[in-house]
Image (cartoon, rainbow, N blue to C red; front, side):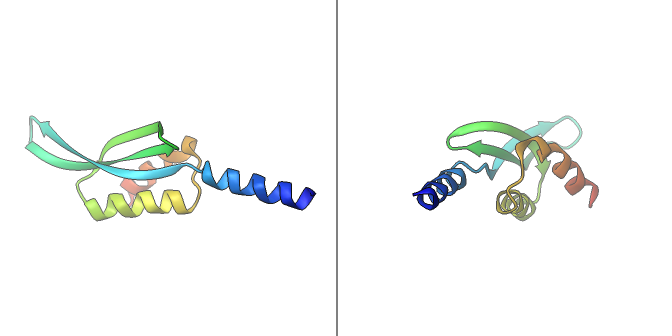
Length: 90
């Protein structure tokens, strides 16, 4: 009975993991005009926990970063630090 409860709890925890998804935006800057940029959303179910826009103009980089955050179970409170590190790597 205890083993069964532990398995159920682990499955529930997995389904409640934070997912990170990239999103696209079209923004305008006085310096460069209109441009397409990508950000990342942190989701728990359908609830948006955090959203950081205008991270990169590189779609592949945004997709990779979001995937890494999800696969590594990044806690949402560390998202901004990870993005700072990502931006510092260029």
